Length: 259
Image 1 (cartoon, rainbow, N blue to C red):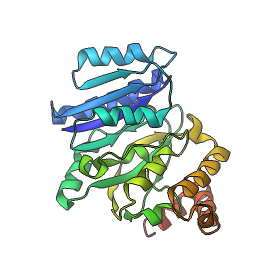
Image 2: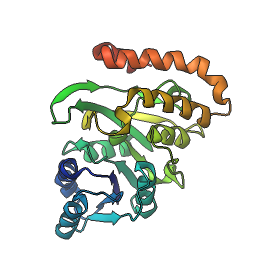
Image 3: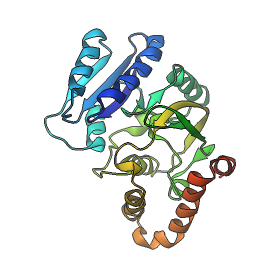
Image 4: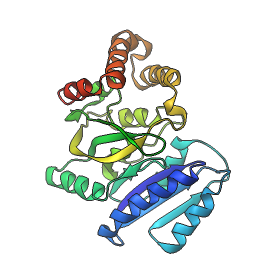
């Protein structure tokens, strides 16, 4: 069984594209898959859209929360319900390619990996291609302290590795903290080369650069025993990496795969 986790809040238009991209490829797995969509008390008609899909496809598992708690706790609700041996994440404003899960699961099984991620495209709010971001061939927890090289919707994790680890209740960079928590015992994440997902920029809290910087500091302080003592080492590297990432994407891609 494969479980796809999708939190959503007031993403009526975007959620349709996300669901369609997951359902199209999921037919390859027939009944061996579930798409758990957790609506975080949307005030638009997202719940109606989700209910319509659930009524037409039993693989869609809708959850309608009665309080708004944010993406992290919404993902946790889905993780507690997930039945799959493998967990994949598809945020409601992102899109997958038709072969995303098939290619990544094959890569995991062939190499006996428990945590993998891939490259991803960045697209505009209207769905236009902006640029592609690559990732290191593998990441350790220490490497991730320099920057979050992993796109959330590109990740697949074995539930045996995930165990009871859940996302911390923070409003930004919660996926970053999640990867650090998962890899805290020395495990390694591996890159499945290829681009299988698109991240829609400009949506939500994560698009705010100042807030992103603030929560990077928060993550480092709260994710390591050294706490604030580590920031003088990691912060300059983080800033340089992000300047290159935003302004010189081609250079970033050449550098990052060798980090």
